[in-house]
Amino acid sequence: MKKLKIFPKMFLQIFSILSIIVLLIHISIYLIFPRTYLDTRKADINKTANEISHNLEGKEINEIERTIDLYSKNSDIKVFVSQENKDNEVKVTNNLNVNLNSLNNSLIIEERHITLNDGHQLYLKFISTADMLQDAKDLSLGFLPYSLSISLLLSAIVSLIYSKSIKNNIDEIKNVTDQMMQLDKNVCLVHNSDDEVGDLKKQINELYFTLLKSIDDLELKNKEILELEKLKYEFLKAASHELKTPLASLKIILENMMYNVGKYKERDVYLGQCVDIVDDLSKNISQILSIYSIDHLKNDEEDVIIKDVLKEVLNKYELLADQKNIVINNKVGLEHLYIGRNAFSVILSNLISNAIKYNCDYGRIDIGIKENCFYIENTCQENHMELKKDTSHGLGLYIVGNLLNNYQIDYQIIQTKTTYLFKMKIQ
Image 1 (cartoon, rainbow, N blue to C red):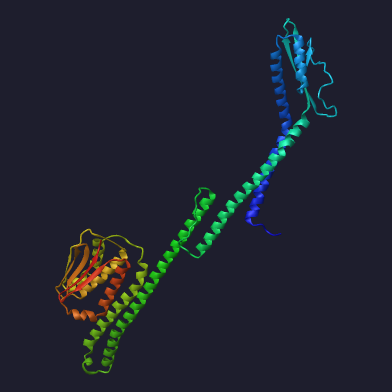
Image 2: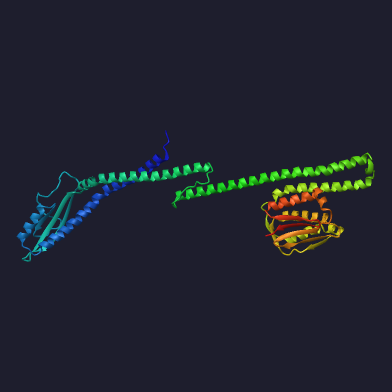
């Protein structure tokens, strides 16, 4: 059996329900009407009896007889005159309008007494006979077919309008969701009502906007990952080049020492240089490994007190500074910086390490806040050209630069013949 689409299906369902309701109402009217009709007929006869008896009060007997005779001929209510009152008994003539073949005849009698002009009492019997059931059926069948037809027509119109309205809403949702599947960011469902359909459209819009936001976030994350991978590639490319140079130097020294070539016969001197080269290589490798933690240092910003983190870092390098008799002037107060605490610790470690390593003996390192910038300045009296050849120095600054870029913090490096200044924005 072929399944009906929603429009004809809903139309048939709604029309069937309304039709059943209309039929039940009309059947109820048809069944209840005879009783109602009888009560109404009784009330009319009672009212007529009151009016006629009141109008005939105090008149002559002949005038009364003429009046009631004329009224009886022109009305379905018959009036009879009696000189005495006999309960449950009335004398009638053959002019009563009675269908003797019907089993549903109804007889209604209203009795009134009036006073004649001579003071005598006269009794009036008001009699109405009718086939109430047949009369009720005739009246019902006179208007019920029309009301039934009109009701069914209105039911069909209401069913058509309601089904069409629901179908239009469903078609709109289907068409718009088809566009949403194409990720069209300019489409949305229009909801002008506060009913369930309006709530459904609103919820679909919210779901779609949430989906678009999630897609945008994923695209941003993918872009960040690609940029990070690119940085790692460039970093490893540069780091591998920087590692090859000291390894080549170390190999040359060791081979010359092995074969006692020239000045390399003095092995103790060059063994010390080999140790220095190995130390630099170890530091470079450690820094290379630490660069991989940058991608984990995201969305961890907090309000960091600079002085607290700086104190922890300075404690680690206190011995190294004392060996070179370097004075560290820490002028940092209670200033704050919005950054990841671990990342800030790595930044300070690299900066303090370089500041101590490349400062001269009895040098000075100034640390403080000036013009909304955190700065580290050291007296750089060792040949600054040699700094450019040192791999660890450049690698450390590379890590610092990447971390600061990760947190979108501006920084600047100013180098002269006698000083080396690093500063970054803290506001």
